[in-house]
Image 1 (cartoon, helix red, strand yellow):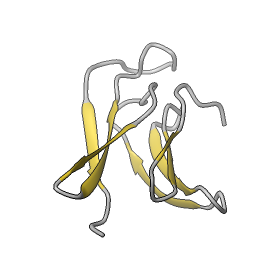
Image 2 (tube, rainbow, N blue to C red):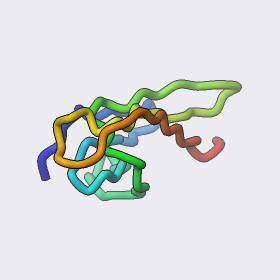
Image 3 (cartoon, one colour):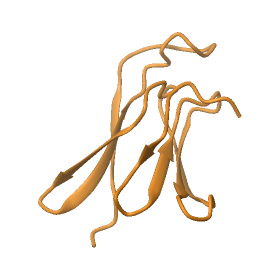
Length: 86
């Protein structure tokens, strides 16, 4: 599937990708390539996700705007997900 935005890799070996026509954000295992998780975004996330840490916990955030790159609605939304606590 084509991706309109690059992947982001965490220190723990997760690869996050979005920007697909199905408007999903996915997490893959960096070693095996296995899909571990997915979530529907309000619109396509056509930029690489960002990873940040607060109080020892990692978060992944993406701008889900549709970006005009994929046929469908456009708009403004930031979507953040908390990774499981260590």
